Every structure is written in structure tokens, then in C-alpha cells.
Length: 307
Length: 316
Image (cartoon, chains in turn purple, green):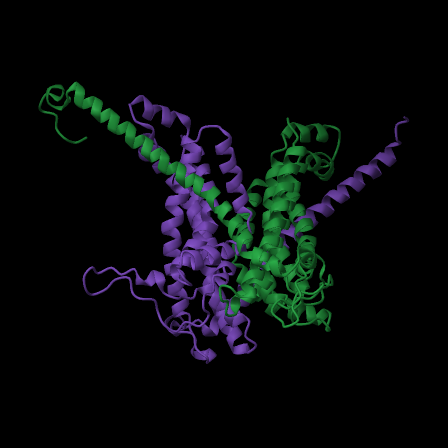
């Protein structure tokens, strides 16, 4: 091999440098496309929906007249469904995460559970909807109710909660566990008094991300047959007479925000599309706020904890 | 413990030996009980998988008594609710394949470039600010993306190509691609950052630029992770429902042309569920058959991803 003349080498280096610079620009543009779409989406929704975002929009029921329609039944429905989801997914998910991280022996059964959780995270949401339609609505007879919807979304976010719990528990160093054992704590005392409280922030982050995913989920709720036109509220959970609590609302028909938005989007009249944009702003603000909260929490935990 | 210890602790608080044994037995029982409960919680995830498979199979089996599997796989029409009923799942698969292909044409190049840029070029500060924002892109509810595809992107595309119908797979696929970018970029970036520094240093020492190092050293070393990221993107695109249901139309149409409207597997399920759906109707059985097909596809991609990761894992 003969050494290349200096001039050729210089040219080669210059060419590589040029490519390097070209790629820097291409990379920035690719990043910008992602960010600009997010920004464009948000401004478009906000500009279109702004005239409808009045207090009445939040306090009126859907209506045949676009100008009078609101999202009262939708946001109340979303809230109640989220309540059911949180109450079932959080205990189940955290318990499963604690078992896999703190208790599980290394055997084939644990391996199957772990692979299975990973697989569940990849199952499309509409499949969960079909599961709920066959199981909750017909087999268990829950009907097209808030209970069915809440449980469906709970199954959907279960893998997210489990994975987040495991990661949070893993971040607690082993010396904490050894210290607890050294003082005579049983395994459950070690877990419930020390490891879980110390990782609560991380678990909370995962739970918030899971719930923000659930609140925007549309397909599985359509599958279980939620109605799109609901002009009444579910039975209030607190009653005037003994025993003051009523669980009738679990069985009530309902609608949720994403379904209301879907319904308005698929109407041909332009007036309803304004409503859809306004509902979209509400939905987007809710999910983005929840995600921002989760990111902030994660950031704070990372900075605060120094074992 | 704030209780003042005035009395002799040993004398008053120490239980008799037999009593202590009972207490220890009780504690052990409680420990066992709690462990059992936690195990049940973990095992419930396996139960969910079984329930999904069982429901999909049991509810779609009656359909295959009426329609032969051969017709299901080879018929080119999907009109289960018409008088002249045809059950060619290929029609829906074609729609799914087209929207997925369009989405991947957006998500894979952009996601990979973003991953290379963030992992090899960007400063620490830029990376830490941009990553959470990109993640937000994946957190936007899909119904909002659907609205965006139908009412913003389609009119924009119609300005370029006036013959484009109001419902089309192109705009649905494009928006879906943007939605998938963060999934692809974040997994790819993690894979590339996991490549040990000494490989890069070796490359730089030979006089390579950052771009050359990224493409010829880091990317091959991170191949299994990149493949996993792409597979994750594909499986997201295949299962995505609301964007296609809103923007691509819900009419089954046997075509691979993205400029036409067509229904995907998931969009068909949504369309049937929007109507009245009695338990034993034909529509009820067909959505479970469609769901089973969708589930098989995602399963294949999951297994493929798992195999790729094992097969091409670089060990340092």
C-alpha cells in the first residue's frame, strides 16, 4: 500500500467533516419534526377549540345543538372510571411487583411470569377491549358499566405499574434490607416498613404514567360498548340516608372524554368539530399535566436520593 | 418510641417462653399468608394472558363452524354484515399492512436519526431536555392524533394532491408514524448508549469521525437493541386503533394503495362495536376472529423481537 498524497488525505478528511456537519443538521431537523408536530397539534387544537372552552362547556350535557353541548357527563365518567382503575390496578400491580422483586425464587415459574408481563405490555389495547367484552360484560354480567370500563383499563395499565414498581424497588440498595433483617424484621416487615415506603416516589411516577395512558384510551372502551350520548350523571356515590354510601354508580352507563371527542370528530358538521377540538384541549392538558408531574417527580427523586 | 421506660422492661414485657413460641408461629403464618397473596397478584398476570387467549378462541370458534378457514384466509372480500357475506380477513390485513408500512417509513428513519443524534452528537443538557418532550409525543391520546390526521393533515395533503379522498390511509399512517417515533428513538438510544465507550475510543483513535463511528461501530454493536426497537414500532403500528378508525375510514377495501380509504383489523372491530351488538350475533363472532388474527400478529412480532435480541446479542 502506498501512502496517499497529502492533498488526497486532506480532501478525504474534508469530505468526512462535511458529512459530519450535514448529519448534525439532519439530526436537528428530525428532532424538530417531532417537536413541531407536538407543538402544531397543541396550537391547532387550542386555536380551534378556544371559543368553546367556556365554563358552560364543562357544566352542560352533550346536545344535538353543537353550541349548547358540553362535556359534563364525559369528565365525570372519566373521573369515576379512573377511580375504579386506580383502586384495582395499584394494589394488584404493586403487589405483583413486590413479589417479583423481593420474594420470587429464581425458577421457571418466575421466569414465565416475567416474560408474560413483558408480553402483556405489547398486547394492543383493543384486544383488552375484546377480553372485557367477552369476560366482564357477558360472562360476569357487569354490563356496559363504569365497573367494566375501569377494570378493563386496570388490566391495560397493570404491566406499566408492575414494571415501574420493580424498577423503583430495585433502586433501593441491599444494605437497607440487610439492616432491617439485622434488627430482627421479618421479610414482610422489611418490605412494608422500609423498601416500599422508600420507593414510593418511583412507584407513584409509574402509577401516574399508567393512569395518564388510561385516561386517553378510547378503543377498549368503545369495544365494551360505551354509549356516546349520555345526558345524565351516574348515581352519586354519597347518599342522604343510611348507609350514606352507594355503589350503584359502578353499574351505571357512562361516557368518557375520549369517546365524546371521537363522537364529535366523526360528525360531518363543522360546529361539532369545534367541540371535538375543545374536548381535545381538555384531554391533552390532562394527560400532558400528568406526564409532566411524573417527569418532575422522577427528576426530584433522582436528585434527592443519595444512599 | 416515645413511651418513657420507667419500669423494668425485662420484667414486665418479656412474655413467657411458651407464649413467645405461639407468637413466632403466628408471625410465620402471617408471613406465609402475605407471600401467598403477593404470589397470587403476580400470577394474575398469567391468568390475564390465559383469559385473553381463551376468550378470543372460544368466542371466534362458532364463526369457523359457519365459515371454512380456507375462505377466511383466501377470500378477497370482507363483508360479514351484508346479505352476501364474505369473510376474507386478507382485506383487513391489507389495510393494516399499508398503514403500518407508511407509519414505519416515517418512524424508522426519523427515530433512528434522532437516536444517533441524541446518543452520539447531542450535549448532555440537550439530551436531558429533549427526551422527556419526545416522550410526551407518545403520551398524547390516540383519539387526539386521529382528530389531527383527519382534520389537519388530510386537508394539508389535499392541497398537494387534490384527488385525495377525505378518508385515506396515507394521512393516518403518517400521523401514526410520528406517534411511534418516541418508542423507536428511545429504545434505540438506550441500546446505542449501552455500547461500551472503548469501542468508540478505538474508532476515534483510528481517525474516524463521529458519524463514521456511529454508523460503522456503534450501530452494528447495538444491532439487537435497534431490531427490538423497530419490532416494538411495528407491533405498536399493527395494533393502533383510533388513528386509523378516524382518519382511514372504516370501509373494508382490498388494496395496498395508501391513497385510498380502507379498514384495518382494529378499525373493523371499532366499527362493529359502535353499532348495536347482541351477544350471539354474527358481528360479535367476527370481531373476536379479527381480534384473534391481530393477537397472532403481535405474538409473532414479540417472539421475533425476543429471538433477535437473543440471537444477535453482543457480549462484552
